[in-house]
Length: 309
Image 1: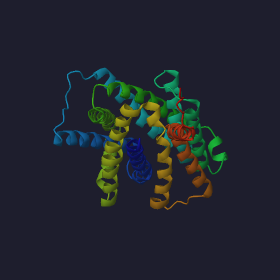
Image 2: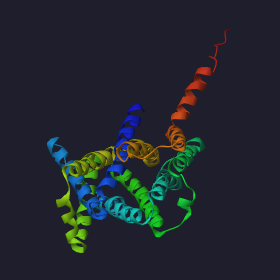
Image 3: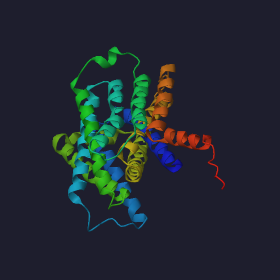
Image 4: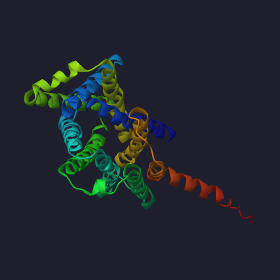
């Protein structure tokens, strides 16, 4: 279990840091163009890693219809809707809606019987979301106004949640690293072709990037996207969809820390309290608290003495 926690904490660190990095990039590159190019580089990176490791890339039993469906939902639809939604709503509301992802995934998992969650573990998902509300929302009035961008962001996470279950199915026969490479490369290729047809001049934005932004772009593509998605998909195979999704809440903590370090934003006491609730929610939702209670109960139980005759 420690390996699972370590892997997911690393993944969420990369994704949380990536939020601030993307904010730096979208000032100079149109969001959809940046997303397409970044994800494409991530996919190519994974294929290069597979080639260097001399791993099998082509499988006769490759379930292409499921791979394409996962790509359509998890890459094209998710990233396109998210980019469009973020551009039409506030960062606070986008973060808050994204915080619903683990809870929505858990509800779908229970409804489709893809996993069985105890009441205590499901409570962990709720506690984690409450923590996100406290950590993200400073002014309630800032999140009450409804805009269409909110719908796009919500749709993006619902669609992504369904893609997790398809990924889980595919990784029963195909290694997660191979699947991730195909999904990122195919999905981003379609996104870039669309951008080339609709806004061909938008790619000229890359020619004006300075060295610092190129480093940010490469780090985001290679580590946050290529490595991050590979680790995340491998955990979906290992521990399940809902169990993996709840770790998404930790990315909020790292995003807040990165905002302080990189963007010079301030962290308030309420955000620290919210982060503590998020950590508690993850521990409850992943079964860590249940395991601790089980061990405590076992140690507290008096040994059963053997009767003599």
